[in-house]
Length: 422
Ligand SMILES: Nc1nc2c(c(=O)[nH]1)N[C@H]1C(S)=C(S)[C@@H](COP(=O)(O)O)O[C@H]1N2
Ligand SMILES: [Mo]
Image 1 (spheres, protein in one colour):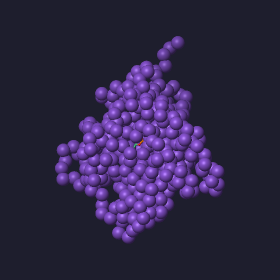
Image 2 (cartoon, protein in one colour; image 1 turned 60 degrees about the horizontal axis):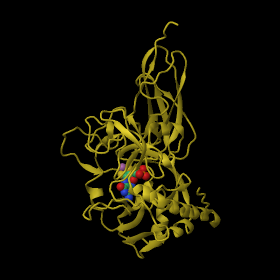
Image 3 (cartoon, protein in one colour; image 1 turned 90 degrees about the vertical axis):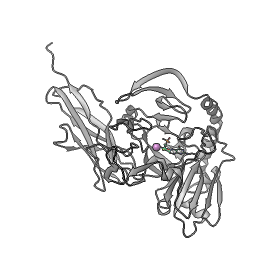
Image 4 (tube, protein in one colour; image 1 turned 45 degrees about the horizontal axis):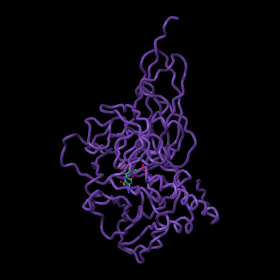
């Protein structure tokens, strides 16, 4: 089932097609399961670290147990422990977010078409076979993070999916640069934006379809990709099989899944998902005060730097007088990660963490530091990411009414027990 595209041989590109056929066959079964909703064999629960944080763990087609926020359309969160296990998030543990209730539970890989039209010289429709075989594949590691990641931590609380910090994941994406596809259609002079749509539908015809747009110059830069591969395999259905947009460094709301329509626009997109939803205050860090009005709102865009400690949780116990490793993940957002600073005294002093292998500027990067509890009691550990543009992960939380752009350093309080006489 693994995709091993090769830019030089067509034999290499033939593999993914076989993989698609296999997946397509598996999809029949998956669709049947999905139609009945989730497969709740043994219901297990876990607590998120905020009020009303009780969550069920649930399995969905092609997914291991994830944290269930909603069944239809599914909202599934990746447990933090997964991020401690590797720099890439496994496909079957990658979080899931859909807005509209009618999902493409099966896709006929033979009849599927990706259409490009609008302000172009020649509208085109690509078959999957053409996408796979007619273009040299590119591959890029990138973090996919929901705009609302960490929303459950906002104070005061805000409405929307109450995510912990697991509405994100890192994968190796394989696909075709969007520009290559746009070139086939021929973008006409005067094009300003490109709009993307997928196969998902609302429950009622009046519901606006989920459509997102990028500015023309962004859409045709070298980073934006129409991806068919995720960590060397076809995309899971819930992550957008057979094709999805990958917009490195940008929030996942633009990463349109089950992508089947690309429209070149000669006027800015005024649709619901660009003009009403996914707006942030046009202030540093998208920060404002609850109740404040007359704040200028703009569409969400770039991600900032973040780091998380993944091997120790709040309340973990550590020994006195013996150092323990502190490990985590970090990413730079829209720029490469420059460094991760670690502090065990609330930020009074910092030391630079050791960065592990670099998979490119849009990827997670693992880091490691060491903590030695010199005395018993509670110790607060924090890690702060700084990116190559010099942007620092904020020490204070932001707030906005939709709970977007949370990226504050997340303290982990560990406990070094008093030694008891033996
Ligand atoms: N077609 C479609 N694409 C979509 C969405 C959607 O509702 N429909 N949601 C977006 C949002 S808001 C997020 S956070 C990401 C989630 O990607 P994932 O489910 O692969 O993790 O998909 C994006 N792409
Ligand atoms: Mo999202």
